[in-house]
Image 1 (cartoon, rainbow, N blue to C red):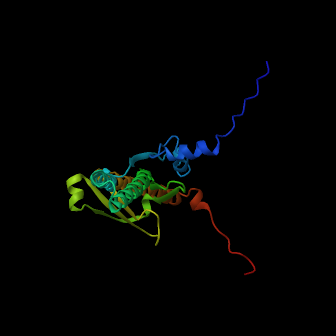
Image 2: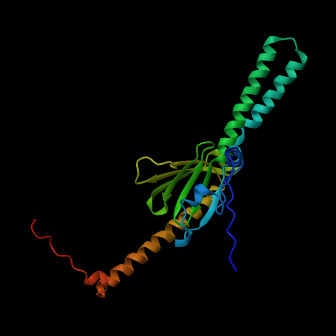
Image 3: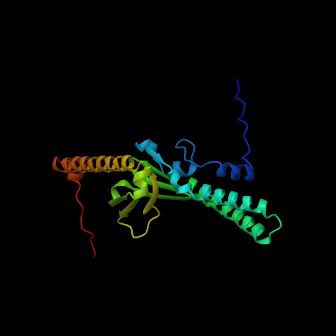
Length: 221
């Protein structure tokens, strides 16, 4: 019995992909394309924690909405006033700018795996910054006064590279738990690398493939 050929489905149109991109605020390890390109689950890499921004980062949006409501209230009592109309229109522009900024912050997500830290950001232009766990030389955690009250903080990563895309991670919710997760991942990765180096050194001492291999000098130089 012959098998029927599979029916190839057409790729989704550009508009569907565009709106699908806008509706994808948080990364899904199973379906997020940009994240899956940098993960290596076959070698044991797994997502430990997905960290979105704290809600405190969105404070300009409700503040601008309240200000716009106040301007509208003034406009209701002074409907024929030109300055009141201009003030209300300007408040609407501020609300729109605050909404766009809130959506950009909503798209900025920090992901911790057992091998690396990943930052996903961008709306129309996707930006993915990665840093291996073993390249983190120093990690500074800052908890301002408002952060201690509302439960958020900021990270500053120092690595061997001079410029990298996730040096500063701001408005991290429950930053103490995230800090413990990163430190545990760093310690486990260091122990794993020490075991690999110890096993390689033991093979060389036992006369394994690495110990028997000898290099001959290049003749004629």
